[in-house]
View 1 (spheres, rainbow, N blue to C red):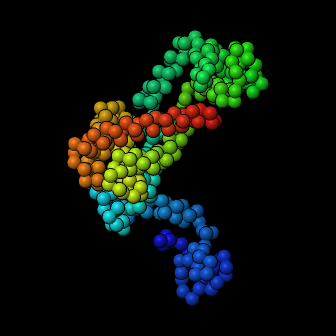
View 2: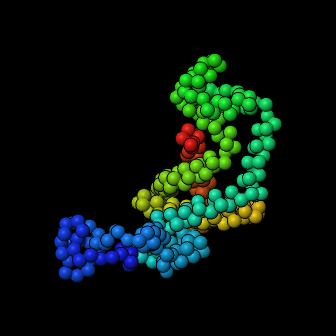
View 3: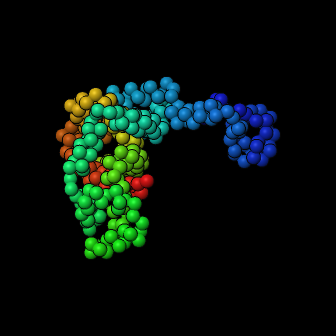
Length: 314
């Protein structure tokens, strides 16, 4: 449904067909009937209205997702879709809030992430040399060499590798150059780039998790999309809980953070019992297998994301 604040035209801007009454779409060419030349405030309003669409369904979806594990998925798959916000839209909302809050919380001085970076700086300053792992090769550098090598040209990197008996492949040179730059920057800007890439990776892990659920519940002969809806709802809940975790991290309440992760595990078990109608003991055994496979997939994805983040670090 088009946003209410869009300006209707008397004729189609694409095919010039005249309208006898205001319409949302041209009956001839199908183009949406609105004037896109509007004040920036109206355009931004359209964007956020389409993305968030906060109405009564939003609050019902939020409360039901948190307080009644599995209920939304079960009802959504049964056809009661109009009562809740669309799964993807709600997932985007939850992930957007998390990734907006993360740099503000993690960038606050005196808290956990800053302590990690400060510890890294102290370790590096007290170390005479450092070893860079370049896939199947590695190279040892003095601390005072790091600044210089990060600015090497391709020809200089080739000579640097040959002088140390290493093969200057594209991958090893790129990883060498970027690793030196990363260490010199102490990882501050890299952390933000890594988080952006993880947000993309999480989106693609949802169908992977759905595939895992389809494997463990294959005897129920459900459609893949049913497992996908469950996966989207579960990952949305995870982002909501991680947002609370960020708040706890801000105040260094790390023990509460562990309770949040325990809450996600409990939610996974309870929601499976609701959605798939499986007894607790069987769900518990399936959950162990599901988490084992998902952790492996997640570790592979995180490794790939980390390598790509280093290679394309700028």
